Image 1 (cartoon, helix red, strand yellow):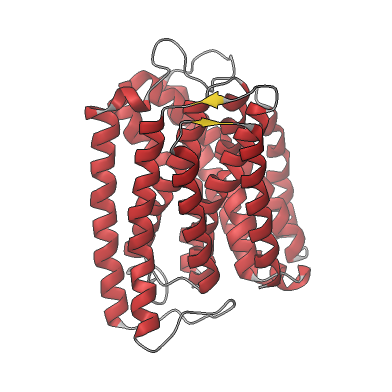
Image 2 (cartoon, one colour):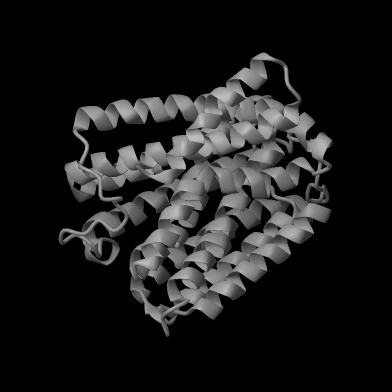
Length: 363
């Protein structure tokens, strides 16, 4: 049994706190921690289903459910009209995977080793997908900036950017989804040997437990989905007052706290496999997750916002978010071009993430 499941004890605590009308800060942080074990359970159930379905269907299952916690949290936030929080969590997921997760994997995995190697072609192809995503998410912001309205500022609650920007965002989202589908075909069909380095009996991140049946996996997936939805509702419902109580902006909570919570389970897996010297898998989790968020999660949320929430969500990010994504994507391409890593490179990535976090806290 994975130790992370012990955090599930906080799920009933969060429910009791909400029913007792406890302070929003207590509800928020308890629910945030409660998301972690449910996300971990969802990930394990998805792994088990994927292992029994073959690489093709398994890949689709990972796409569908791999980012489900972030999607569920974001959907509740969209319903509350917290679009800037949603966009902050998107950016936070991208930069935390590249800087925090990849940095931690390189640091801990390389601490007792001179260097670790990984498939440069696989890693660089995913980093290139991030470059495409960067262009797509930056151009609507440039359109808004050059058009005279300017970029939103931190704490800006403006959600209606006008029909032109909303139309551009919808078209760009469609292009991103098409590109992501092509990336799936590339990784699951034509070049799947690059993305499945442990197909010969090793699955990289199993915890040694017995394999689950399909029935058990589906049941656990349903339970985890319900748990994530419940904790997400409590999390989003308390985020506004909790932010004021602790003196942090909703922007910081979205870009740091919510992003880390939503990806906590796969963060741990990436570090764990790096410790086992399986950097192919660690890099695939870190950079691949960022690509999934940019090319799948973000456009899906944009398109769903046309039917959820007060206004469609435009792909217009504030200056801090644009700069953070630009730096993170450049770093992702730089660190994957040689196909090897060491602990010092990991430390540098972590340092960049901390610097961004400090700036975000004061923004």
